[in-house]
Amino acid sequence: SLRCGIVGLPNVGKSTLFNAITAKQAEAANYPFCTIEPNVGTVLVPDSRLQTLSEIAKTSTIIPATLEIVDIAGLVRGASKGEGLGNQFLSHIREVDAIVHVVRCFEDSDVVHVHGKVDPADDISTIETELLLADLDSMEKRMDKLRKNAKKEKELMPAVELAEKLIKGLGDGIPARTILETDEEKELGKQFFLLSAKPVLFAANVSDNDLPDGNAYTEQVKKIAEDSGSNMLIISAKSEAEIAELPEEERPEFLQSLGLEMSGLDRIIRTAYDLLGLHTYFTAGEKEVRAWTIRKEAAAPEAAAAIHTDFEKGFIRAEVISYDDMVQYGSELKAKEAGRMRSEGKEYIVKDGDVIVFRFNV
Ligand code: GDP
Image (cartoon, rainbow, N blue to C red):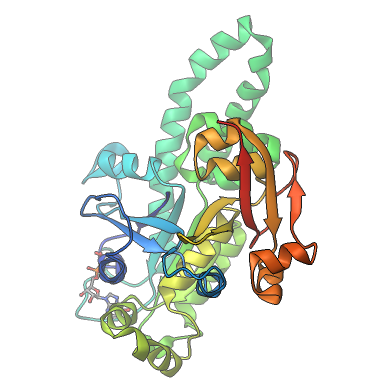
């Protein structure tokens, strides 16, 4: 399952948000999750199409896609030099697919700010600087060996050139996600496992009276997000905690009273999906209806591998009905009779909402 790490300075609202997440997770206890560590929560990716498909397939078992959220506490200035829980913090970030960076955009004299005042730009740069320094350090350590190897193996030259570009850029305070411009660079850059190359979603944490449009602080965050090719959301961690405590049926009204259509949590999940270039296909049988997460570019065999790696190796074809056709014709059989089931081969790029049966050799 995909992992998102929540980072941010102390006292910005990370635990509040994380606790809201784990409160929701308890609700979903009847889903088959693996056991998890205390700082890891599993959230269900909301998708109303699953309910519709379960009615069509006449099954009550729904298995949504999931996302793991990791609370990565302990980042302070100097983490890259081992201050605080520095090293532990950085190794946790290395394991996530995307970063949710919580930024304090609320005033409250009762909640101490580690640097004395609310200052989103300064807070963001503190965290990003630690990631940059850690990356710079690891690139410099690699460089000698990389150069030496490239003398023997000429095909390593592009990697050397990219490493030089990264060292220069990181040294100038630019995150790797901005330095790596082309698809080739992004691909080649993966071997360096850079923290600042991970996609970032800024979550500007405001008090509920600043929902949904934010305040002057969130404007700063928005600007920084835009300049660094990231995304941002305005959330209220405190309200999320309140939402999590409400019974399901009372949530829509509460959200409406805050001027929101979706909870911050659901918006974070959705945005993280987009950020990571992911989408969903379904399997829908009598036993269960299930959502599977894949890259937007994934062809049918790679999509099959989400279910089981053997499915990829033995892939023969995919029988595909679009979600819309399933809804329009009301059953797999009727869609098939109407000629709406397509037989697709290895090259087929799976679309969001495809309902698929894979045929494969074992
Ligand atoms: P963390 O250190 O980043 O995990 O921060 P916490 O989640 O522990 O929050 C620190 C304090 O800020 C707690 O007392 C929270 O209740 C409070 N807090 C979190 N979000 C908000 C908010 O949106 N508005 C206000 N006024 N307080 C908040």
